[in-house]
Image 1 (spheres, rainbow, N blue to C red):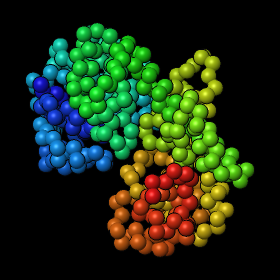
Image 2 (image 1 turned 45 degrees about the vertical axis):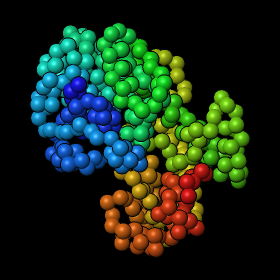
Image 3 (image 1 turned 120 degrees about the vertical axis):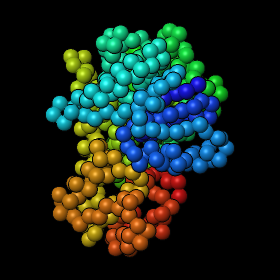
Image 4 (image 1 turned 180 degrees about the vertical axis):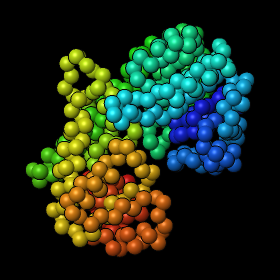
Length: 375
């Protein structure tokens, strides 16, 4: 089967790599360097599962700048377009996504057009009505940052926003790409599937916020936060997953869903979701004070992964420290190894979300709330 993937981002690439074991997959998007890299077998994906997967499995995967060529002969189309937010209203901007859906429906009549982007609740039904196309389907992805391919290959569940034959067809294809046996599948209405996506991300944001507030309390009361968390998580209703404190939830996904739900709850009485952003800000303010109290002459912020300009807590922390008059240097992956050696030597305090092997040698001057370090 030929499958077209519109998009060149992490979600699109994870889907394409998983499906290309069994299908001919063609990706398309307007970024020439990414198209060239994919065609050369250099997949721009940070995931420890990638290298062993490529060694074991031959793939039929290519990319093109020509969307029409990618869609020609496709038996299924996946669309993974990151949506920007209107800076004035905070609403999702969907014009570009709408044009891609319309093009796919026009060039691939009768073919499932599967939206993988996190869209506003009600968007899929609106597009179905507008285009008179029941083939437009929403199937949310639940991959984690840094483990996109792993989660595409080993999903814990699949949700497809169509209860009919088309939804069953899409779920069967996605299941075929999975390497995990017995993946549960839930077929539901398109709007319900959209709500699942946003509310699940808002719940994760709330869970991060909960353990961060527990950690903040422990810091203020001079308690051992790890002992408290270990005890709390013994309750099987809570569990010991996603319980490691951090500087705040960030990235594109969690903040956007939390803000979207806050803006769209309207007259529905709500108290948890609307307070998440404020709780995030409170956490950053407390950590800023903790860092400043260490009276370091030069503060280094260690950010070893790709920076998400929108909602990155490390960038927010930097801005707060600079506003307080601190001398701050941010280390990012584009810097050279020589820069990293100098960075570790010259900074009196290094702030890091997580302890990693690269900074284990300067552990004594690292500030981190990583209570379950891998090193």
